[in-house]
Every structure is written in C-alpha cells, then in structure tokens.
Length: 301
Image 1 (spheres, helix red, strand yellow):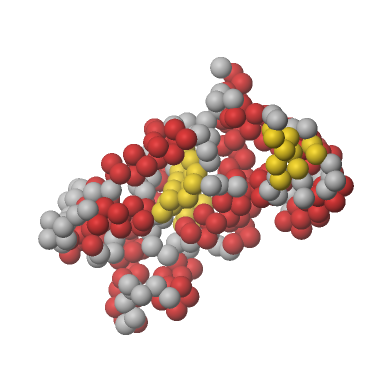
Image 2 (image 1 turned 90 degrees about the horizontal axis):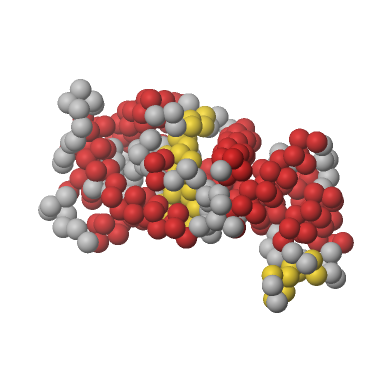
C-alpha cells in the first residue's frame, strides 16, 4: 500500500486518482494497471514525503511513456498544485442529454478519470423538489420529461409540444440546479452533475471550471438503449407496452434533437456515443483540453 506524508500525518494513498491521471495523460488501461502495480510494489515499504513526489514517481515508473504523455502528466501535476492553492478552479462536469442517451455510463467513466467525490443526478434533485411540491400544482413535474407536455408547456410556440413540455419541467428545476452547482463549486472539489434537465449553455457562466458535455448517440443506438431500458436496468417507471414505448422514444428523440441544436448554438461540447471505447477516449481528451485551458488561464494571471 502506498503511503504519503501530509504535514505531520502519514496516510494510505488510494490508487484511483493515479489511475485517472494516467488515463487522462493518454495511457491505455492495461498500461495504467501495470504502472500502478509497479509503483505500488516498489514503494510499498516506503513513505513518500509528499503527493508531489508520488506524482513524480508515477511518471518515472510509467510504462509506454512518450514525450506527449510526460507533458500531459506534468500539465496535470501543475494544474493540481494550482487548484489546491486556490489559483485554478476545480472541474464541474455537466453531462447532458435526453433519456437513455448514455449519460450515466459516461458519468461513471468521468468519475474514474477525475476521482470525483461529488456526483449529483438531476433526477435526484427532481425527487427532492417533488417531495416539497403538490402534484396538483405542478403535474408536469411528476412525470417523465417526454410526457410533461400533456400538463404544461413553456417556450416558443414554434417548438414541438414535447419540447415545450420538457422546458416546462426544466423551468421548475433551474434555480435548484444552479444552487447545487454553486455550492459544489464553493467546496473546491471536482464534481459531476448529470441529467436530462441540464439545458446546454445554462450553467457555464457559474464558473470557468464548468464543462458542459452533451451525449449524443446516433438514432439507432439511442432507440435501442431507450427501448431496452426496462429489461436492461429494471426501471419500473417506464411503459412495458412495445408500441407505446416506441412512441415515447420518438418524443424523447425530439427532445434530444432540440438539445443538440441548443448545444451547437451555445458552443457546448457534443460527444457522439457510437461505442463505449471511442466515447471514453474522446471524454479523456475533452477533459484534458479543459484542464490545459484552465492551467494556461491560471498561469497567465
């Protein structure tokens, strides 16, 4: 077990952040594990004097290291130093997309990459708002996003009714989502907010550390993930009638198309989910680019 000194205290050091740094630096998963095993073995009986020394040993022992990987690791180390000093913001990753687009799957990968300790779903926020609301007052809040239009609609009359219902539900949640993001940013830790209720471009203004990412699978993949949500996840609140489920997918796709249009207009990052491996690599590249931008901004101040 790795042990690192922090001031007068010596504590076991988890491997999760190290695994994330190596992957963000562009290292293959297999090489990450070989590197972690090598570092753990060589320093199992030693106490490293600081986290910075641990980072340096990680780079020294890394497998398949090239100049680009070393440069990326050094970027991560410098960014973490400035972040801990309060000179660079932590990352708040907001993962967006309609129902069954793969948001949760990508969020799990982001958790590993950043060793995130704050993870919030907008579905959880919606449940809390429901608990404090009367269904008779806001029936659009007590249904799926693709069904909300049956109760209330907001936004331009030129938009499809399904989209306007979605916006009506989102309007009840924007303030609480903003407050939640503000509180997490104030804590100074990396975080992930994921959910269908995050409208592209709404939250980037809260901090330069906020990164919005819209997950966008091709229609056939989205259709498959949506139609199998009951059998794949056991979610009991979805309809099990195939014809009705197909109609609900079409409504959901209208919301997704709207979100993608908004993402493009707001310069929000769109991550195409064709397969997990490609999406995972694209996510790592996107996070690394954001970290480099934050580091450059902090060093130029």
